[in-house]
Amino acid sequence: MEEALEIKKSGKRWRPKYGNFIFDIKTGEFFEDSERKFTVYKVDTPKNQFYRLMQAINLVNANKKGFLEGELKKIASKLDIGDNPVLKIEKFK
Image (tube, rainbow, N blue to C red; front, side, top):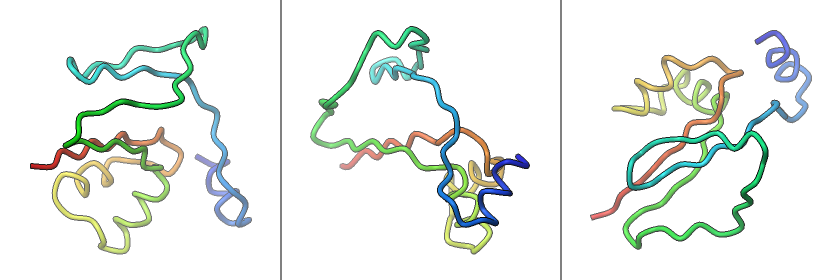
């Protein structure tokens, strides 16, 4: 947390430590790839879905400015700026 605040004050880019995880679209479960056996260059997704990672610091700031609503606002209100990114899955009808 303190490291994230210092980086934010300095204007530098946030580069947190990270781990590799695999998300199973069918089951909705995450699996840790601690040995980094898998590398994903392209993700094949159904035509009606879109995935992206949203950095916690960006969600916290957007929430403070009142830009979020609904489920995303609820999630952002529980985040700290140093938390892991949020995986956003958008399904289009």
